[in-house]
Length: 98
Image 1 (spheres, rainbow, N blue to C red):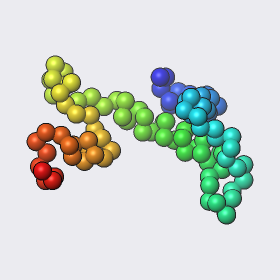
Image 2 (image 1 turned 90 degrees about the vertical axis):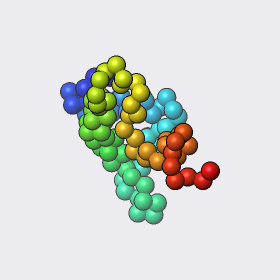
Image 3 (image 1 turned 45 degrees about the vertical axis):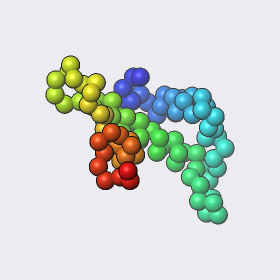
Image 4 (image 1 turned 180 degrees about the vertical axis):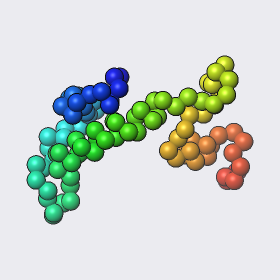
């Protein structure tokens, strides 16, 4: 994937629309104006939020590499947003029901 910082807003919108359409999400169904009844975001708010995510979070995650020797990099777990979900059932996990 190209560096999101080098892409224009229009290019990122195309990327967002394409990736979401592959999983069946259509942002065109969002309202064009704010709807105080439902509180749903407008189409432009959704695109702005997703563009910000692509420009900040994705490069931070994709630039991560495990610490230490590259030969043992496969054995080091990548950073997780909620590590307890991934480690709760791992062998040697302490503190769970046995």
